[in-house]
Length: 282
Image (cartoon, rainbow, N blue to C red; front, side, top):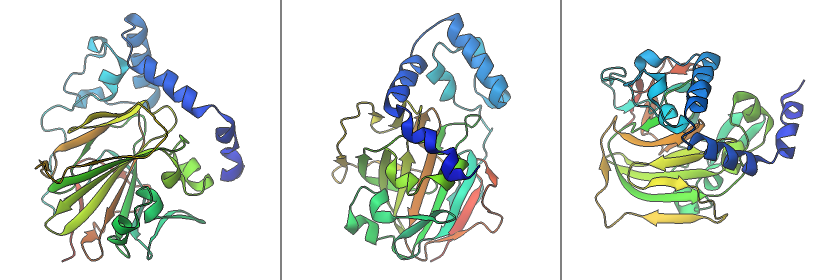
């Protein structure tokens, strides 16, 4: 079956309703039902609880508490590199932005302008730059960390669809990461701006950042923006910047000549937060 045929049911599913229902369950304290579901989830997806700061499954009152669990001290040492991988997961795609086009999968690209919610001036800063799209599977650690030091300047919530973001869907749904609901975080660094985008998906109950808390819900259906020019919100390389309440994808944008990717990187390669992503190109 082709990827396009495989994703047809997703066009028909009530994705918003399913996501809202999943969010309510994930945030509920359901006692033994919650514990039983977490046990099933750990077994089904092979979650490594020995890495968790708290490996006791029965101690998690809500599924969200388990899903966003912190890791034990030392579980993710930070590499000596200019740029670090911000998440556990796998490489979906990475490389050069062709003028304003980001490669999604064979036959599919989308524009930087679409990704950031229509802001052409912001998108222009990444013309012929570089991008990385990283997929977090259900088994992964779901906190997101900074790839480099950065000062937050803007956050943009972009409403959208809630397709799955797994590899099959990435190959089958055109412009997937610029169609789905997302939170675009804009930072300034010593090498210029960079964007870290949290992309939502089916069953992703919400996305949160350390400076704002939960961004969605609510889901008002309109673009929202926060500016932080008058605040000094600075996050260091390796610090947590946000989290997914149920899993998804991050897309990063960097200006031209700023980032040289780790030569060991390749599509589908597994990743760990804190490993070397690349070096400065300046």
